[in-house]
Length: 219
Image (cartoon, rainbow, N blue to C red; front, top):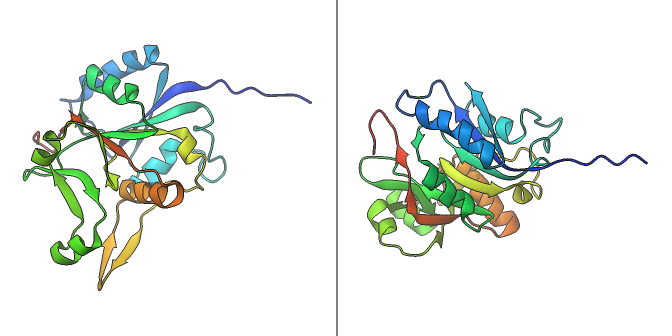
């Protein structure tokens, strides 16, 4: 019987690009090509797909339902980097070297200082019509890494061992009823909630790892 050995690499750097990458950020992605060579990694990108479709395409290298483990059979970790995040080599190494199967840096999503990490708190939702998102001042006061219910995938590392325990499609969107209201949950948050429900694993936030988020201006 013929045995086929699959040579695995350490990191798959996955970059969903909706339309363009800002010229301000292009140099870092050119640098990432050089960095990936000595980090035992490879870069994958996709352009013009919606959030859910882009993430499923990337984490299967286009395999989809036909070959959903095409990518995760070849790598130890998926490293998600959104095309509007500014980072440097040291920040990337902090993420890669952190001993966790599911961890993330964090970034501010609006000028108010609200970060794209949250706890699933239905009582809070009923009073405030949204889940409890962390504020940047709250995160900066933390000295130790901490778990949350979900995080944005702008700068996130996930072990492929997690995806191998899930069914494809790995990313989808939940519509959740909270009392008399319905919450439309984004694809990255839904992934976090699915992993929490099925595997009892939550993402760990590295409080020192704040990434700049470019939305026409840095916030």
